[in-house]
Image (cartoon, rainbow, N blue to C red; front, side, top):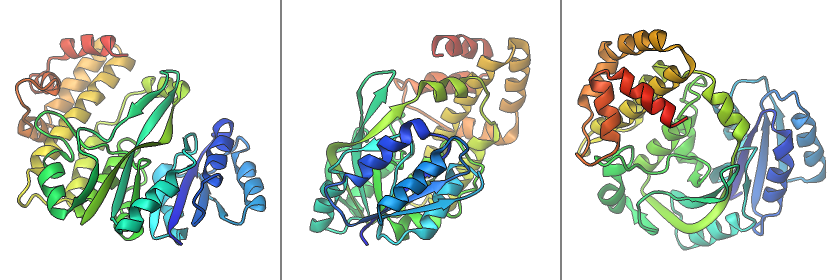
Length: 331
C-alpha cells in the first residue's frame, strides 16, 4: 500500500460528502481511506458507514470526541501505507493529487512531497503557496542551505507553510512525532508535526500544482473570534519544537523565539477582542511580565523592515493601547 489518507471528522456533514467523493475519484488507485469519526452527532458518522459499505478502500473508526490530534493518532495507528496524507473533512482534493505525487515518487522516494492549495469560500478563490521557496527536488544539503534558515520563522518573518494538508509524508517520519503531540494542543498543531518532519527529512519535493481545496469557513472563523486564545499554548508548542529540533549549526532557538513571539501577539489581540479593555490590559501586562513569556520576547529579533517587528515591539514594551487599535483594525 503506497498511500493512506486520514480524514478526521467531527460534525461536518454538510461538507463531508464532497470531501469523500473527491478522494474516491482519484485517478491513482493504490490507496486506503481512513475515516475517523471523532464523536460526531450531526449524521457524519452514519455517512461514513454508508460510504464504507460501498467501497472496500474505506475503513471507518468511531471514537469518543478527543480533538483533531487524537483523531489523527487513531488514523495513524490503522494506516498501512508508506506515505500519509491528512485531509480535513470540510476540504476536498484534486482528482489527480495521488497521480501527480506518485509520478514524483516514481523518480525518487522522497521523504516529503509538498504542493500548493486553493482557498475557497467567503473570501473567493486564492492560491495558498508553500512560501518563498523554489519548486523541485531538495536533498539534505539543499534543505539545510535553502529552507532551514526560514523553516519556522526567518529574520524577515518568512516561514515554510506549516499545514499538514498540503504535504505527503513518509509514515516512519510522521508517526513518532504525531504520536507524542499532546491532544490538547489545538492551535498550531500542524506546525508541531510538519516542522520536525522537514527537519528530520533527507529529501523533499515541492510540486508546482494546486492539488488541495481548503475551505474558508466563515462560521468557524466567527466562532474563533468570540473566544480568547490560550496563553500557555505558544509555550507548549515551543517546548515541543525543541524536543524534536536541535539547535546545532542552525538558529532554531531564535526561530522558535520568533514564532512564539508572533503567537503571543495573536493571543493579546484575541484577549483584546473579547474582554473589556481594562480587564484585558491587566491580563496582558501580567502575562507579558512573566519570566517564561519574557524569555521568548526578549530573545526574538527581526530585520528592521520586517512587519512582524511592529508586533514584537508592542509586546516588548507592553504597548497595550496600540495593540488594542490593531485588534480593531484586523478583526
